[in-house]
Amino acid sequence: MRILFITATRIGDAVLSTGLLDHLLRAHPAARFTIACGPAAEGVFARMPRRDATLVVVKRRLDLHWLALWRRTAGTLWDLIVDLRGSALSFLLPARRRAVMRGGRRAGHKLAQLGATLGLSPPPLPISWSDAADQARADALLPPGPRYVGLGPTANWSGKVWPPDRFAALFRAVRDQMLPGARPVVFAGPGPGEQAMAAPVLAALPDAVDLAGRLSLPEASACLSRCKLFVGNDSGLMHLAAAAGAPTLGLFGPSPVAEYAPAGRQTAVAVAPGPPGAAPMDGLAVADAAAAAFGLLRR
Image (cartoon, rainbow, N blue to C red; front, side, top):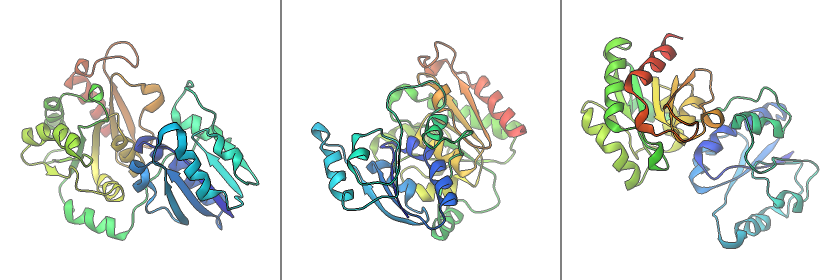
């Protein structure tokens, strides 16, 4: 059985789609998979079992990236095409069955929207994949012993970024009141923008483990799974932490928490006061985020 799975450009949306892949892997134990996704999301699927290929879709003018993808996939008769991009491409490829997510914004969490594409309710939770080498790197970077608190101070636009001094203050509150002796771990992606957002938090917490820009996504997943708590802005890293099984607190202001709250077995949110999806992040007080973190840790 050959399955083509067309998913997101961004890391967070790609992570949310992994629950569908996990369902399909279990439902079709002999199936082989081809993943089509954006460049940033490629690493989400790097360790996925029974993956024949990842086709990286680089956006082009006039939507010519879809033509390029058609050329790479039209020679196969697909047993199933799952298209989470709602593209016309799915109807131009030979397939025995199609499951196409319709476009446009809708009410409800993104996970439920994805699950509805395959008629799954409740929708399957996201997962993350890593291998023995990723786990060994995580062991080297975060040796067993200390209790680690992951911090994700970056996001894809500045409006979603909580002030860095509050990350440091929140970590100290967690360490002093809930996790004595805990050590901070700062996560961030590659590139100067991510480094610049992480730098003030690293400066405020000189004992932090600096993992900013040092990890592949499977390595990040392995490291996140070792954290007793992860606190981060609404970002792909936040979704990866929840998928990796870390107790995850998502911080929200000007982004829709009802649609993008972290999805996992141990998650919570702290939301800035103000209009839903339009509240400024600097309105979120450390005390409110700490209360949410304490509640998550108690659970």
